[in-house]
Amino acid sequence: MAVNAAMLEAMDHHFGRLVEYLGEEGLLENTVFVVLSDNGPEAGDPAQSGQFARWAERVGYRRDLETLGEKGSYAIIGPDFARAAAAPLAYYKFHGGEGGIRVPLIVAGPGIEARGVVPAFSFVTDLVPTILELTGTGDDTPSGAHRIDGRSLAPALRDSSARIHPPRDAVGFETAGHKGVFKGDHKLVRVGAPVGDGHWRLFNLAEDPGETRDLAAEQPERFAEMLADYEAYAERVGVLEVPAFYSPTRQLAINYFTDRAKETFMKTRLWTGLGLAVVVLAAAVWLGLPRVLVGLGLHAHYEIPAIDLAGKRALIVTTSHDTLGDSGKATGVWASEMTVPYYAFTEAGMVVDVASIQGGAIPVERQSVRWPVATAADKRYLRDTEFRSKVEDSLAIDDVDASAYDIVFLAGGWGAAYDFGQSDDLGRKVSEAYAREAVVGGVCHGPLGLLQAMTPAGEPLVRGRRVSAVSDKQIEELGITFTPMHPERDLRAAGALFESETRFRDMLASRVVVDGRLVTGQNQNSGAETAHRMMETLLDSRRY
Image 1 (tube, rainbow, N blue to C red):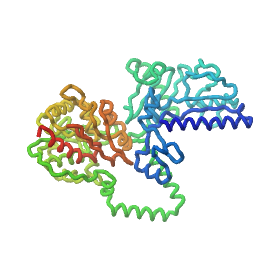
Image 2: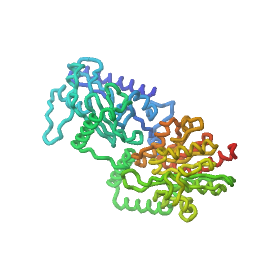
Image 3: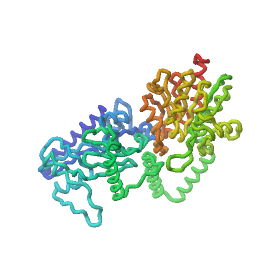
Image 4: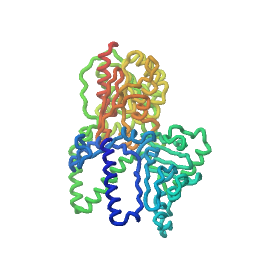
């Protein structure tokens, strides 16, 4: 933050040099200054990406604290300081909350008196009409072009009590699926996942600039009116709905590499490009895509030492939800998050049962048992008639005697986002098992099943406890941000101390956290180690 403050001081210094130069040249009295930020604080931290680190090293950027802020350094404040910088406003850059879009604006020049802070609402589209009026250019729109939106700020520059937009003016906006509309003192806004939940909310910004009190239920008529205002705006300017799997981060990467590919194609001969493509394809075939993925970190090999837990019992719990939102795409449990712990437990001599939220046939994500991502445990499962019969006729969680198990493992997969955190039955069973000294936990979306669990003292099980699960970053990178629950977001909201690793793509990272008898893993890569640490914890517990 000190470096960030120094940047502002340096900007102010050089802005002063510009003003001095304009004065010396006799141009100052013919210049209008408009200074503003383009958005709220930037929360992204590209330094967490391995690819960024390699690029930065190649071009000569540094991240060490000693030289941060000097020439050649790369400074960014990251998500935590971004929230602090935006406080008390909600969210930050790239989101529709006031913290992402409310910014300072300074206008100065001939005929503009210093009047302090003007409280009137204004929008970025007001700048062009303002400049046209201040410069005497006129407000005629060139023939054939779109009309200019916005209203001139000049009245407020002359009278600080003036309003720019009449109370009935509706001002809409949209970016990457985040939407909103201002009208008078009110704002209707929808902030998408993974930070928001995608629901429309209504706020009175004059009374609640931090957007803490949703008025939608109290003012349904205003809510409906402003929603219609937004839809009219979207129709007028041609807002396109983002696809269900849209990810801004991924789209930026696609755009970048597409542009680089076009440049390369234009600079090289076609045959050179074809020859390179053949070489790359041949190398991929020779190496084997599954082996490449393992090498990158997907289902990286993890060796579990021999453990004897004969006579002990484990329960693996999965989702019963089989459809990914409104997309119609089939989903369920990610196979390896069920198969890897199952065989880890059985090979330790444990008796393993399989349950699901509703019981009966468990939906298994089809792609998870196919090339190139299927693990050895997944392939073994497809040949294992006993295990498959347990999956095809699973126990209903409400019928399970949780006190009979020494380990309860919550398997993940997108389906769990729809029924794990919402299940009172699952929460009650996890609570019963934990009260009887069982080791509980899970991987990926599985830890959502801990949200309803309580300690014997009646406190939320995850409050103040270290946990891991699938990260918001991985969810955004995969583009599936529309599910009702997100592990990192919702576990943090429940008071958990969330931990995760990050890589170029978080689906290639892994993290396992042990906090007493609570053992959780970040994603599909964490299944083996999570199962190992659960058995290790059981061995060390007084129950054994």
